[in-house]
Length: 349
Ligand SMILES: NC(=O)C1=CN([C@@H]2O[C@H](COP(=O)(O)OP(=O)(O)OC[C@H]3O[C@@H](n4cnc5c(N)ncnc54)[C@H](OP(=O)(O)O)[C@@H]3O)[C@@H](O)[C@H]2O)C=CC1
Ligand SMILES: CC(=O)N[C@@H](CCC(=O)OP(=O)(O)O)C(=O)O
Image (cartoon, rainbow, N blue to C red):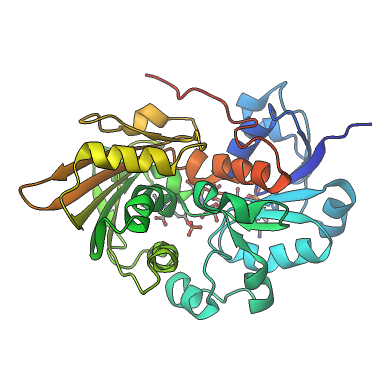
């Protein structure tokens, strides 16, 4: 009998779900016992995803909570916001561990969720149970828990870029401006006008400026760390590429810290967390340098002339921004090596 952890994936036909499969197939402690679809049950998953031919031979299962509970120990819910709100409590009540990739359990306040997501929030009882899984920052809080809410893609790149400097009190958080760019896969597999080739190709488009649902998530974490309310200016933009997020952060420095000081501070903060790589002086990261991997790469430019600091943080939105971090969180939850199943070099070129 296998002693591996039995996992199921709801939303396995979406970008996050398919990426979970890509990594979990090689995870030494995990067996995928069910790939689940609300719309294509009974069909071999490789019919819709021929790249999985002869690798994942399972048929898709339907979303039947009691059947999932009979087969699995843990469920990844890679489902749209609004769907997780209703599904996750049922899975938890059935005794399953859950790692949810949606935005439905990241905000502590249901009112804040409803204001930004424009959807009914989950009940406070379940919001309270969720542990926010920004892996490098909250690793110790994740050990042994049953329910992790995986961070958003933009928050992951942005928070990992800001937190060490904020913790050290080297920056004035009232001056924070975040200019964030994403590849189109960030909006999921469902078609929309925004991701239509003719709309997106050879185009560079800002959207949800100051209205993006990730603003309260970023402000919640920064506020916890600063010990007071933090507000940010946040602009999101769509770039005509498939994967990748670059979050460029502008902030006023407290004191005259150099690039070398910042490199030292960040390397120290992320010591023991191999998925955050701090670049050397003048070597700023590009999205392609983390493509297909769980890395977040960070570079700096402190400007003595203006007293401001530019921080550049890049991730692959589908990996470190979703499926990869979810698996990193699984490892932390289970007390396994943080890198298990994730040790891939980025795809280059
Ligand atoms: N793409 C990204 O870069 C990131 C995504 N996220 C979040 O992760 C989640 C998944 O994202 P992503 O994979 O991109 O989204 P997709 O739209 O690509 O996939 C979502 C999947 O959810 C399934 N689904 C839809 N409705 C239901 C339902 N009622 N019950 C069960 N399953 C349902 C669909 O599959 P089927 O019809 O087969 O059931 C669909 O394939 C979302 O909440 C997203 O916001 C977070 C960070 C980054
Ligand atoms: C490029 C693109 O459209 N990205 C999406 C990311 C959505 C997402 O991941 O949503 P939650 O984290 O809130 O679940 C967006 O900006 O809305």
